[in-house]
Image (cartoon, rainbow, N blue to C red; front, side):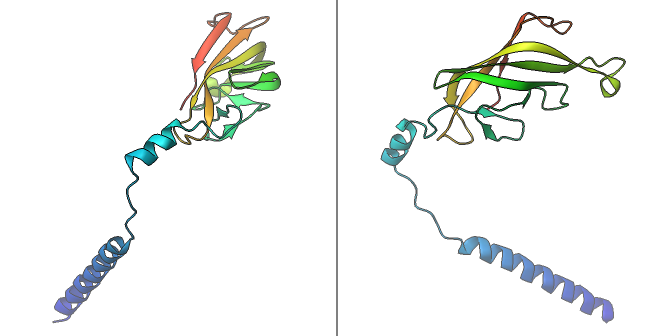
Amino acid sequence: MRKLTVRAAVTFCAAVSLATVMGTAGAAPMTSPRSAHTLAQESTQPPVSPQPVIVDCFWHPRVKPGAFVLACGDGNSRLASLRWSRWDARSAVATGVNAVNDCKPYCAAGTFRTYPVTVRLDRPRTWKKNPRLAQYSRLTLTYTDTKPAGYGRTTTYPLWN
């Protein structure tokens, strides 16, 4: 008899929990759909930001950052000591260093070596995460002295959106 009572109590609690969740979802207010006219107006409005941003590894928009991680997964390539001489609606230019892990004998035990670079950001596009902001979508590094092994004098990266 006791097993039947416990089973009934558990079943009852599960049913009440399910009814509560379903009732809460059903009680949510409906939003009115936006008209095609409203959507067309929103898509043609220019971004609110007066200048494009660069989006970091944590999806934060930045303007003229002093540092920027290129290798979000492992941090083995990053820009530092950035000094911006230009940042406008079409492009941005800075000088700084690219700190690159040589991964010798392996990345966890590697050494970061710095290489002087000129950084250029361009191709501003609407940022998918926040359409009211434009973001630079391409980054070009030009090594002005030595460069990491296997890198070209100029390296171009698409930036994430």
